[in-house]
Length: 218
Ligand code: E4P
Image 1 (cartoon, rainbow, N blue to C red):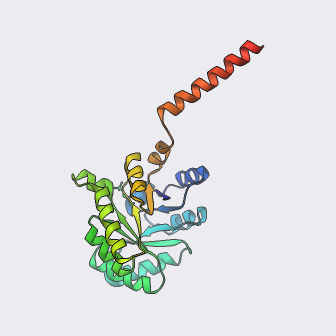
Image 2 (spheres, rainbow, N blue to C red; image 1 turned 60 degrees about the vertical axis):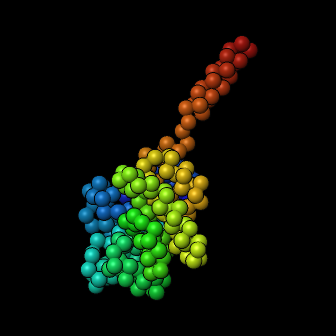
Image 3 (cartoon, rainbow, N blue to C red; image 1 turned 180 degrees about the horizontal axis):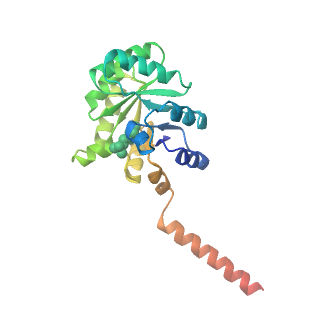
């Protein structure tokens, strides 16, 4: 499973990249706003310079003409930009046009398997089901991911599933057990992935035993 980081924060991206398992980045307007950014071009270019993996940049226009123009503009910023479009009819129509131009689209705000089917038919390179937000409504978010996988395998769609809106390591574990293509993970959760209390405890014991053995020898 590929690991993307879900952030627009440069330090977080640098740190995650230094861990050695960063395969790409996803951003969204809320994450940009959190960084105090209202014009995303500069930040998208800076992120693209930090990774050769795909970097999703979200289009803000909702009307057909402006959505297409904004998407083409974002795609011109760097070769690894992926255009993030919402799962609306306009978004799907624009996805189809961009896919025909070999521009990769990540269809976002996916909350049902049928929406995911439409995105694949439109030629999306990626789709982003929001599992955490679904869980919040009492629906099993990863259950939707499983349904999407079944549908895609029934018809041989190559659209990659980015498990999004991840809130905890359990989401990452279940995504991996399902064989999802990608998880896009907040920095705080990336840091939780390696930690286990027994690892810390075991390490403390090893170091204490070693120190004792050294003391006895001297
Ligand atoms: C996906 O690409 C989105 O940026 C993201 O995962 C949304 O997550 P949230 O529900 O934590 O805002």
